[in-house]
Amino acid sequence: ILDADSEPAPDAVENLMRCYQSLSPELQATTWWLSSLLVEAEGGAMHHGCIVTPGGIKMLDPPPQPTSYRCHLNIWSGSLYRLDAVKEVGLPDRNYVLDWGDMIYGYEGAIRGYIGFLEQSSIVTHNMHPIETLRLRRIGRKFVKVFYSPPLRSYYFWRNSMYFWIYRFDRGGSVTPVIWHFFQLFKWLIKVS
Image 1 (cartoon, rainbow, N blue to C red):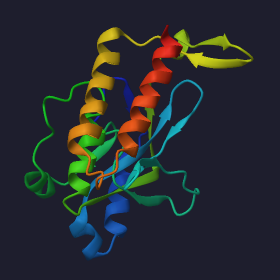
Image 2 (image 1 turned 45 degrees about the horizontal axis):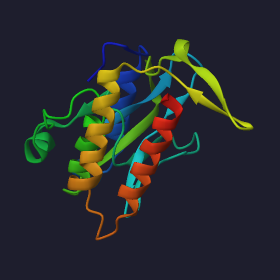
Image 3 (image 1 turned 180 degrees about the vertical axis):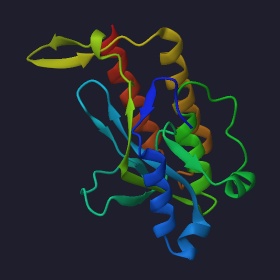
Image 4 (image 1 turned 90 degrees about the horizontal axis):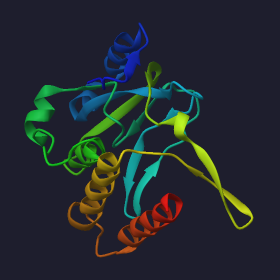
């Protein structure tokens, strides 16, 4: 899967296949997707995979070696999915458009016992953030980064993520992830206004 604003390195797919072939048969049976390392076109920021924890989603910061590591979810641009596993998990929920669909889909696989791997040698250049609209705003003595995101995209980002935290994520009775997410929304609203 590739977004229209993504460009894989010439060896990206080959490196994903090499990663899969290096896994034991047991790991191959539980692996449902392989992800490339997404690198921002502007600035070179890397988007690593995430894991699902009882407290929410945690982004990983792995060392360069080994080049592949387990994770539950990632941006799906630059990913390959194993079709027999997709048949069991089902297709992505079409109600999630633009943002968070990939995170929710990764979660759906994780709760069914599947894992994914991110292969750091498989690089996909991704134009994810509107860097040209980035501005620094002063709030008291602090500066915050603010960028423009189209209203429709912002709406779906917050709608999809709130729905996930409230209705889909198994919090084990804890409201901490929901409170944390609403706190993030509140901070974002302050930055926008």
